[in-house]
Length: 346
Image (cartoon, rainbow, N blue to C red; front, side):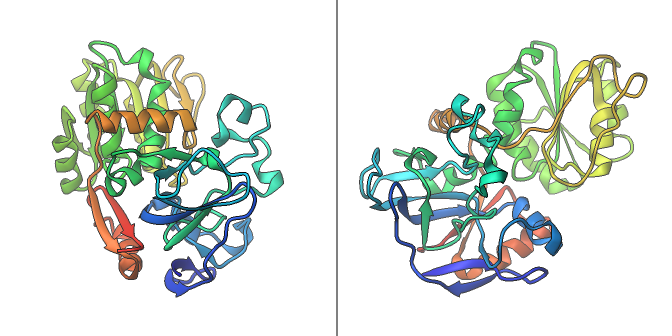
């Protein structure tokens, strides 16, 4: 089968022919319909050799959707040909967090060398994907897999981040979204669907600010040295009740802190290497800072239900598997509008 692989540290991703996988006991083989492209993949490909915890080459793609091609012995719950999405943050299924359905916070994943597909285990940008257990699949039903596959990360991650802050996003409140790209443009829709908050989007790219307005942002402002002051003016000096940073670089983390109000939530979702300085007199009184990771399987079901109800949709650009390297080039250059999706089987 064809697969997009990251072959060696510092190398560009390349499409190669690799052996077809076969499902073992409890495993499920998918024929991949669609696979998402994400900045997290670029982060992996930017790591030095000493930081990698898994061997190369690695088939990329941690957002996957497909049809059930084969079931290993003991695998149940799905029928051949059924359309499914892959829940990516695999865990042990047994620890304290997994027992609560929070496999994204599995306490033993590192110890047991359990990796998400495309982030250590063979990923979804391939004609076939081997899923370790049927519990890591969610039925798609009548949802379009091409438009739904980014929701497994670009929808699930902001949804998980936003849910915790919903009690603060009441009438008259303000939520700031920094970065209106793949995750941010979905976060704007989720905030509009789940809360009455005024949504302010910040970005450095005019075209992404246009997208932010298109998907429902009340305000779309340039993310520059005047942005925090503009947010304070919009809120009558109070600052935002919730700030979501989908970039996570040092300048945006500082901006997130500057936009926050008293008793606010500041959630750093992006993995741009920034960190917040937190302390008395440095941050607003009783502001809470969080750095969440992905989301739960139950939350993925909830996100897909929101998509089914028309409350959220993802702007996608589609590519064949042969064009997958170019999709990563466009993503790295900031040229993707919304989310890039690979169609490995045409």
